[in-house]
Amino acid sequence: MLNISKVKLENRLDLSTYASGKNILNRRHFKYFNRFLFGFAVLLFIILFLPWTQTVIGNGAVTTLTPGQRPQTIQSPIPGKLEKWYVREGDQVKKGDTILQISEVKSEYFDPLLVERTSNQIDAKSNSVNAYTQKIQALGQQTGALSGERQLKLSQAQNKIKQANLKVISDSIDLEAAKTNFKIAQIQLNRSQTLLEEGLDSEVDVEGKQLKLQETQAKLISLEQKLLQSRNEVLNAQIEISRIGQEYAEKIAKTQSERYSAESAQLDVEAQVSKLETDRTNYSIRSGMLFITAPQDGYINRAIIAGLGETFKEGEPLVNIMPSNYDLAVETYVEPLDLPLLHVGEKVRVQFDGWPAIVFTGWPNASYGTYGATIVAVETFISPNGKYRILLAPDEDEGYDWPPGLRAGAGAYTIALLDDVPVWYELWRRLNGFPPNYYTPNTTSDAKKK
Image 1: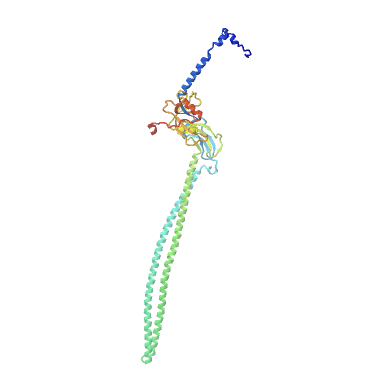
Image 2: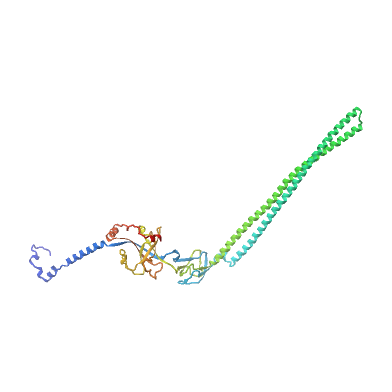
C-alpha cells in the first residue's frame, strides 16, 4: 500500500471481523520460535561446558610390528639368467623352499667342475709348501754343518799358529846360539892372529879359525833366514784364520739366503693356498646361490622378473614375498606441532579402511567401529613427507582384537586421545590456532618398570 492518503484504512476497517484477518492477526508462531531459540541457546550454553577430549589426528597404513615381518623382495646376490620357476604367484612357501633356479652369465664361472679343479690346485700348492718345508730343513742342516766345519778349520788354523809361534821361538834360540858361536869364532880368530904375530901360532890354525868364522857366519845368516820364514808362517796362519772365517761366513750367508728365499717362497705359496681355499669356498657358496630359496614362511605375492632366459644384475629384485606369520601394527604420521603430545604407552583409536565406523573425535566413548591401539615407538627424525612417524600396536587391555581380515598396507585413520577440556575451551583454542594442552601422562610404577 502506497499510503498516499492521510486517512489510514486500518482505522476505518476492523480486519478482525474477516476470516482471513482472524487467521493472520491471531497467529502466535513467533512466540514458539522465540521459545525454541531460547531453549537452543540454553542447550548450547550447557554444551559449552561439557567435557571434550582433545585429540591428535593422523593418517597412516597398516604394517607389521617388527621389520622382519614386513613384505620384502628377494634379490640375487650374483648376476644371472632365470632358468626355471618352482612356484606360482599366491603359493605358500616354507623357509628354505626353492622358488626359482638361475644360471651363471659370467664366463669365469661357466666350468661345472670349478670347485673340483680349485681343490686340485690347492693340493698341488700344498705339496709345494711341503717341498719348501723340506728344503728349509735341509738348508738349516747345511748351515749347521758349515758352522761345525768352520769351527774345526779355525781350530786347525789355531794349532798351526801355535806351531808357527813355537817354531819362531825355537829358531830365535838357534839364532842366538849362532850369534854366540859367531862372536866366539871372531874372538878365537883375533886371538889366533895375535898369537901368529907373536910367533906363537901357525898360519894353518889362523886359517882354520877364519874358516870356522865363515862357517859360523853362514850358519848365522841361515838361521836368520829360517827365523824370518817361521815368522812368515805365523802371519800366513793368521791370514788363513781370517780367510777361513770369511770363506765360511760367505758359505753360511749364502745358505741362509737360500733358506730365507725358500721361506719367502713358502709363505707366498701358503698365501696362494689360502687364496685358493677362499676361492673354493666362494665357488661352493656361489654354486648354492643358483637356487633362490624362501628366507621365511610366507606367500609369493608377485614375480618381478618372470620370463625364462631374462638376465639380471646382482641385487636386482626377483620376487616379492609376504611373511605368513606377522603381528599387525599401524604406522601413522602426525604434524611436528603435535609430536611432543605423544608418548610411548598412550592410547589411540584407529579406524580402518573398509570397516564402517561412526566417529566423534571429542567423545571417543560415543564412537563406534574404532579399535584400540597403544603407541610403541615415536620416530625421532622427520619423514620425507614433513611429518613424524608413530608406530601403534594393538591394545591388549581393550579385550577384543583387530578385524581378522585386515592386511598390511590397508589405510588407517588414527585418533590419539589427550586431556579432557570443556567444549568452550576447545573452540577458543581452535579459533586462536593454539596447540592442544602439553602434558606428561601419569603412569603407574608397573608401567614404568615395564
